[in-house]
Amino acid sequence: MKSVKLKPRELAVRILTEVERGSYSNLSLNRHLTAEISREDRALITELVYGVIKHRIRLDYVLSKFSKIGLNDINPIILNCLRVGLYQILFLDKIPDYAAVNESVNIAKLYSKKAAGFVNGVLRNVIRSKDGIDYPDRVKDPLRYLVVYYSFPKWMIRRWLDLFGFEFTESLCKAFNEKPRMCVRVNELKINKTGLQAFLDKEGVVHNPGLFLEEALYIDDGPPLTELDSFKNGYFQPQDESSMLVARALGAASGETVLDVAAAPGGKTTHLAQLMKNSGRIYAWDIHPHRVQLLKETCQRLGVSIVYPEVRDARVPDKNLFGKFDRVLVDAPCSGLGVIRRKPDIKWTKKPEDIPVLKREQLQIIRVSSQYVKPGGILIYSTCSIEPEENREVVKEFLKENRDFDLDDIRPHLPEALSADVKEQYGYIQIYPNLHSIDGFFIARLKRIR
Ligand SMILES: C[S@@+](CC[C@H](N)C(=O)[O-])C[C@H]1O[C@@H](n2cnc3c(N)ncnc32)[C@H](O)[C@@H]1O
Image (cartoon, rainbow, N blue to C red; front, top):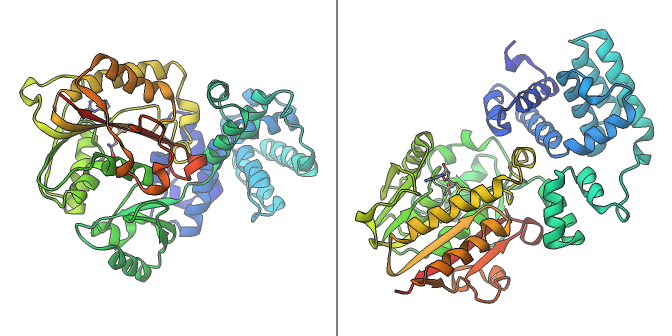
C-alpha cells in the first residue's frame, strides 16, 4: 500500500506505529509526507503525530478509564487509532468530535468489524464524559498530576521538581508541549533581510521578525520550507534563535581561525561563517560521516566557502593543533532535554542513566578541545539541555582542573533582553522555553587566560 493513497489519519496511525517500533518521528514524517500530499493534510498529519507523541501518557490514562480491555492487550494499530481519535477530541477544537470518532472507526474497519465497534464504543463514551475526567490531584499528588496531565516520564518530573519546584516545572511542561514556531536565519552572505522578506512574500510565506536577533525570522505559514526557492537558493537556514545565540557568543571576526568540534549538520558553523563574512577558516568536525555529508551540503547551499569539514572524534587529541585556534566551539552531544518542543520523542527515548554518561563524554570533549585554544582565545561550551549536570557542572569541573581558563563575560555578546538573565560571574546563560519562548539552551563563554 503506497502512503500517498492513505487518508491523513490513516497515515498518522501508520507513522505512530512505526515510531513505536523504533523509527524517529521526524524521519518517518519526512519519508511519508511526499509532495503529492496537500499542505492542509501534511499539517494535520504532523499535528496528529506530534500531538499523540507529546500527550501519550494523558491519552492512555483517559483510554484506560474507558476501555474494558487493558491497553497492553489492544493491537498497536487499533490503540493508535484510539489515540489519534482521542487527541482530536481532547486537544483540537476545529475538528468536531463525531468526525474524529468516525475517522478512527473507518481506519479500524480496515482491520476488523469488531475492532471498529470497540473504537466506536470507547470514543463515544469519552465524548459523553470528557468534561468530567478525573485526573490525579494537583495539590495532593503533584508528581503524578504533572506526569499524567502533561505526559512526561516520572524521572524527568521528579528531577525538575527537585531543581525548580512545582510552579516552574508546570510552566516548563506547558512550554514543552506547545507547538514550536519555525525559525530561520537570514543568510546574509546571499541576501539581506528585506530582500528575503520580499522574496518570501512572493512565495506566499507568512513571516515575522525574530524575538531577539536581527538575523532571525519566524515562518508562521506557507508551503513546506525545503520546497521554497528561497531555501533552495540558500537565502535562509532553519535554526532556532537559541542556537543562533551560540555563534554570536563566540564573537568570531573575519580572518580568524576557528574550530567547531561537533559541527554537523552545520547550523552554527554556517552562522559563524556568516558572522565572519566568509573570510578566515573554520575547521568543522563531527564523528558521524553521514552528518558531515549534511554539513557539506548545507555549506554548499548557503554559499559558505571557508569551512573545512572532517570526520573526527573530538575526544581524541591532536597535539599538532594545540594552541592553534583563535576560537573553539564545543556544541556538545547532549540529552536534548531543552528541545522537547521540537523533538517530543525525547520524552520517551531518554533515560535518567543517559545523563551521567553524557556528562562524562562532554567533559572528555571539553578537556581535549580546550587545548586547541590560543592563549587569549575563546572557548564556547553549549548544549540544548536544561540539566545542570550537562551544563554548569561540566563547566565548573572543567574550570576546577584547568587554571588556564576562566569564565568570560558573555553579556556583551547577547541581546540586551537576555543579558539581564545572566547570573553573577557572568560567564554563562541558561535559556528556558517557558521564560524566553525559544529552545532550552546553555551557553558558557570561557577565555584562555594563560
Ligand atoms: C548538538 S549536535 C551539533 C549541532 C551542530 N553544532 C549544529 O549547530 O548544527 C552534536 C553533534 O556532536 C556529534 N558528536 C557526538 N560525539 C562526538 C564526538 N566524540 N566527536 C565529534 N562529534 C561528536 C554528533 O554527531 C552531533 O552531530
